[in-house]
Image 1 (tube, rainbow, N blue to C red):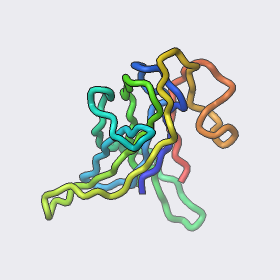
Image 2: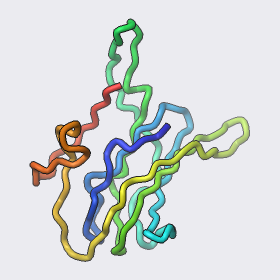
Image 3: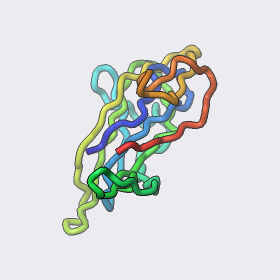
Image 4: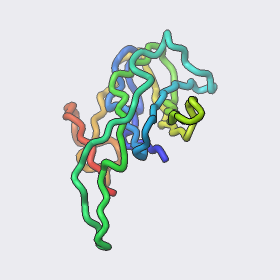
Length: 161
């Protein structure tokens, strides 16, 4: 099942790249692709003229080393793949939800099959400038956003299976 590892910002200025970017974790499956769709507060799809960036992506394995569990079996972050929507720009003010549909290619039938979807928290897109949000070094203390920092550090995904 897909899940959101990093939520988009709660608010952003019109025409500015969403930061932190939306990051999705999915099980490693051949032929997987993800499609981002932006919905407004009335459940209407925001058209392509108002959303810029890569809305179709394929997940990437991080290739993390194996970790041995207490039972002696090993698991790796390679069992999961990650997709970073790092270039999404919304150019219309309003309140939106980002919905990511996960699909897999059924090579036998020759078609794409919808597997599941995840929905982000609301993102308010404002005409005026807003305070920058940053990913948190200690999400277990503060949730997905860090209230202590105003700089934009490089984000790092850590997988704890």
